[in-house]
Image (cartoon, rainbow, N blue to C red; front, side, top):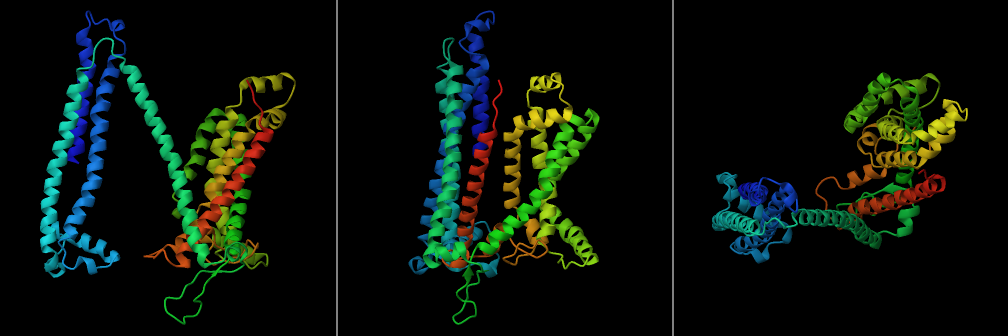
Length: 457
């Protein structure tokens, strides 16, 4: 913490020096003689003092932690006989003993020497890294402030750095996506080495219980994903039936029909729905909507359980209304005004203009908002757990309890799990399957958007 603070102080001081020095080099404060605005000279020195020092800090921090761990663990007696799983626990115990977070009953005498060595190495590390990073930042400040002169192109240098930073951010985003895909893919391969791919894709039963002892009932487990996917799409379908009409119609009303005062009041109220935590929606579904649907069904002779796909879908639809309404409203307002004026000039009514001109022009954006809502619905977990249950049933009946892919992923990964059995690895297979399905949905939506897109100049 102190190291970062020292680097920041040195960098801000470099900004101050860099901004003031070019003003001293010109007469009568005529800024036209400078190659760049004075603030760019300050930014130039600020970046050179900050970035290399931070890179050095994080690099030394990474390698020093690894080195300290190796040195400290070498002092533990019989470290070669300890399993890899317990080594991490022992190292945590050494750090706790070094920080005096354990009492006398939890102190292991065999680890006292290692904890003392840990404290010694940490003290050396803290002093060294503070000295190295602070000196580096100061040296860079002195070196680069000497390069500043009237003709120095500070603005171009700073802009090149910003372009490089944006490129790095883009590369990180792409690599993160690739990393997620590869992690899902390789863990899923491990799963399919133990469970048949066809059984997983086309299986009609889901019961991923693996026995913890030999001879236990259900030791093999059943990993048919069809019931889980059916529940996912059933709840999502119900949610979209609720959210799409309400969201689009409310966007149409707010954009073209509502008075400005009404719009300024209603739109923030609708957007508040997006800020409510999903667990609150879950309580609302479990305590209010579920019992209401059950009692309504009983009054007309239908057998509806409190935890049903209908309950979860309705509440989820209410939750995602703002995603469609707010985005569609902004997209409709972004349609060029001259298109509307031309329609009105030809004698079209407001309703005809909306149907024939505005909605076709805004269709790509509206489809995008619906896709965002679908992705939000597919990825929801808390509402499903509290309102639809966790039982995997192969049914299209919205009055029964079902489960979804995300709920099963959470269930499979709860607790301390070893990633060497089908029950745990099934979570990655479900994740990969859901990723591929949503990818196909996006591709279909893109084809729809391209087909109906209209370009306006």
